[in-house]
Length: 116
Image (cartoon, rainbow, N blue to C red):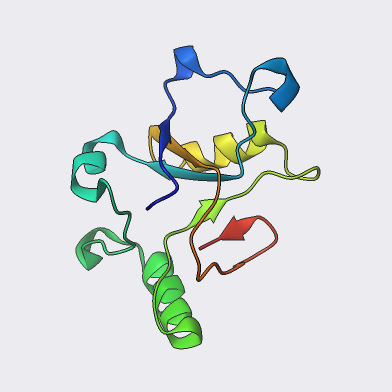
C-alpha cells in the first residue's frame, strides 16, 4: 500500500489534534503481529479458509458476489465512533494496529465505519 504504515506500539502511541503534535488517523487495521512479515508491504484479504469461521466465509462470499473481490477491512473513526472504540474493535482482529492516512482507490464503504 503506497500510503505508508504506522505501527502501533501501545507504549509509544501519540494521538492528538494536528496542532497538538499528534496525528489524525483515518483508517485502522488490526492484524496479528505474526502475519505482518507475510503481508508487508501489501495487505491482502487472502487467508486460509481452514482458519476462517463460517460467518467469515459467508461474509467473504457475499463481498465477492457484490464487488468481485474480497477487500481488506479497515475501520475509520468518526464523531460517532471515537478512535478509542475504533482501536478496541481492531484489537479483536489482532495484537498490532496499522494506521493509514489514506487508502488507495478503489475504496469501498462496507458499513458506517468499515472500509475496504
